[in-house]
Length: 354
Ligand SMILES: C=CC1=C(C)c2cc3[nH]c(cc4nc(cc5[nH]c(cc1n2)c(C)c5CCC(=O)O)C(CCC(=O)O)=C4C)c(C)c3C=C
Ligand SMILES: [Fe+2]
Ligand SMILES: [Fe+2]
Image 1 (spheres, rainbow, N blue to C red):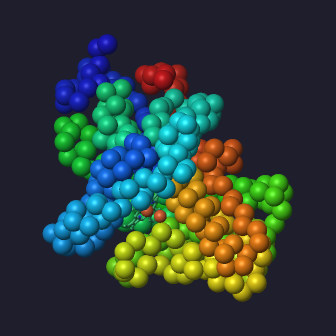
Image 2 (image 1 turned 180 degrees about the horizontal axis):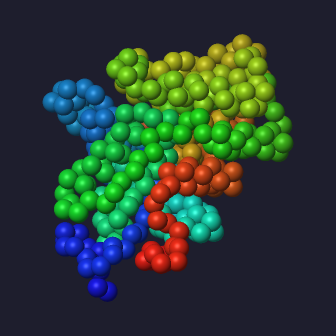
């Protein structure tokens, strides 16, 4: 091939071949549900200054001196309880979403590759960008499995892309989608999933929408995450025609002793069970893929908390996963953000087929 697709900084003769790619990023999981695999995963995740904003030296002492001695075994047992034959649910769903997105965009005439990538553990963002670079990608659209922007998640993915870019001579053109919390097709996909669940399993008295929490301090410092979660919840409740009494918004997964976003999910489930609510439905709109936080913390621990407090029926509504309405939404988000990039081979262009 006359053109140089490599990362060598040389200039190809003639017109450049443009190749577009999508990087579909999610958080990541340990490689196995064992303490030995969870330890390096947690060390990387909790060592990210975007995730824990405590002065580095103090945090290193706490992380390595206490947390990484105790938490890996406990976390591993939780992961073991949700592990699938093919691996971590988060990674399995994220990979499937990437495949479906590539297929749907392909059917709409786009010629591009979609790679899944994980912010922590494997497959890392750097390894996927290396692969895209080797394939000759010149334009990369970075999409994230975080509908609501948070510095702890969204900005951290951008950091990882920047870290990789710092090591390159010839950097592809990047575009980042930072949020889609109010995207009508995303809200519609959530609503259709909930309605289908109600049709199959019947309907509870209250729909509880649980989002991952972050420290309140982050909000005070300007993180728009809480406002975006509340807007997603408002749009979803309006689309489903739910009154204030028929739904709740809560935040889960508090870590450490600092104040995190409230109301907290588990105490709310206990309060609702104790206050006479018998049947509850729980959905996690901020998680496009089922994972430890939804399958274990909500569907197992949350259920137990509600039932022990006096509840009679706890119904967990699965995440968007591979639902056609969600892939439709994702395709729309991708297409809008690919605008102007040569993904459709037209007569006279040198855009290569996949
Ligand atoms: C310690 C601080 C943490 C912050 C801040 C945080 C923000 C945050 N996380 C998600 C999404 C996910 N988190 C997941 C697991 C997970 N989260 C934390 C801690 C923080 N998260 C830990 C320590 C863990 C690992 C498991 C454990 O030991 O408890 C996951 C699931 C990963 C999986 O493999 O299934 C997701 C997804 C968001 C969206 C967010 C901020 C908005
Ligand atoms: Fe988390
Ligand atoms: Fe958790």
